[in-house]
Image (tube, rainbow, N blue to C red; front, side, top):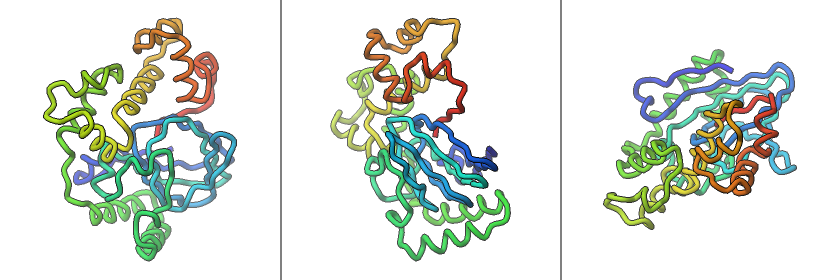
Length: 258
């Protein structure tokens, strides 16, 4: 996996670029992340396995936020370019409300004119290097930029959720904000791609996994993350990762957030 930084203009919107290559067949567990992802399949075949079904990844598309883990399967000699947007940044380039692509990976034809998509796919396919392909994609993104700034209320909402590591009530989240709960939830879903409650749950689980230490019991780990009911914790954890806490932390399989 190779990682590249965005240009200065796109730094407020893009977290990173990733190029994933596989010479042999590769299966990789993808945990729910906070980034909406723009993807381009450079070569080979890539598919996603979720709840017993396998779906081929489009050549060029946009993947929304998820609430469940899934497995990406790369065929031999496959390669993908991923653009990981910062929270809320994808809405600066696409008009569609981001919650409408929740749990889905949409072909770009669903978001742009088909003729324009084919032109972009040709330009990206003709690139010879990572840098050339990313440069061409950045030019496309700059041309698609809608000129919108990140909503300050949504920015503050994200900051509060992250600061609390996802462990806070919605009533506390909106305290002191010049917006009603219903209006905040609607705007948050449209820009971020999911509800504040679901986003907070995602951040809480991600932080728990990132900070896990085998020196602590799972009960202690759960309580530090705000789970005071072990059965509730086990249920939420399995829904998020596809495994029980014991299975997950014993496993050596590669797992990534995106």
